[in-house]
Length: 244
Length: 209
Image (cartoon, rainbow over all chains, first blue to last red):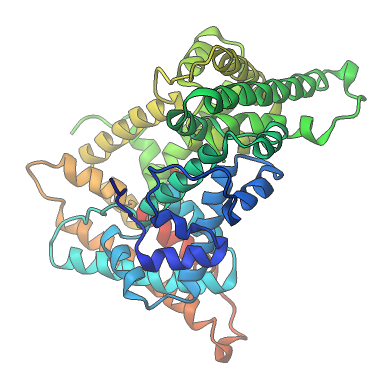
């Protein structure tokens, strides 16, 4: 059965321009890809495994931030953007954090000011008409995030049996626990076993760094040099459990 | 109306500071909770058992714990959690949360308490005066207040107050936009105009992220 696609063609074009690989979101994601066929998404994934943090979280975060930068600068008057926002009265608390981040730059900030002035006007008008305190509908970014998450999780699950990916995965920071849970649910057999054992190894390495970090807080060992991995291990431990 | 008690005075005083008074108090409460947990509760058995059951804090409160900057406190708590998770992964099991984030549970309790107190003293002159001089409640807490008022609609003065606060915010946004124009390049942004975007977002969703 074809999965219902929450991303409209309009939303998808904006994100696609950034990653160049998300057009595959519209494909039937319940069907696994042939792991022998390595497309641009696979190579992007290998690159992400070389960076710090959960690759799924990174794909979501970067894509959404890119999306916000584009819509608040270039698509300010697009009805596809403004109409859902008027119903949802802006974004949910989680995604409003991203809007605050986008607002740090001058150009999106001007767009944000235009859009939020309009949203405040909507609320004021409803209050004026005695329609009560308006209730926001679902945040438009939540739907987009769900699709991006599904895409990225499926991408890793599809190539989990690939030797090259396994090598990259073992030396990476691995996936965070919420995304690991989603990947495990999609896998069976050897790839599932690999993911359990790889994450255990990654976790043991992180725990070792954390223990070294704690040991070096003791005044007796405070002169021992601390590696970057040890210094950031306490934040990494938190992000492993809840995502980035 | 009941005799005024500490929660009332907390709410009244928060009205004279910036932002939604309930959001401000909740942020303060959670900050104090996390700070005292990191400072003196890291090795308390009851705290650790709860955190183990919840697999640590939720995303929002975990990020707040990081922002506090008590690296050793966070490291002690999370080293234990990582070992627990690693053990289960080693056995081929996915770790599951047994209870909700303790900070979220605490926040809910305080949110209800502040909401109740606000409703109780809404007719009080001193409190009305304090609310008039505040930035007003955020939309989420206004909605909570109106859904608690099952039989009576929100008083007209409160609706008027909310509209006035929205108009102030819109004026600041409009001024911010006007001053982006090259013709106004020599005009400086006031403090309120410089933070007008963040303020508008805070009004619509509150500050719990």
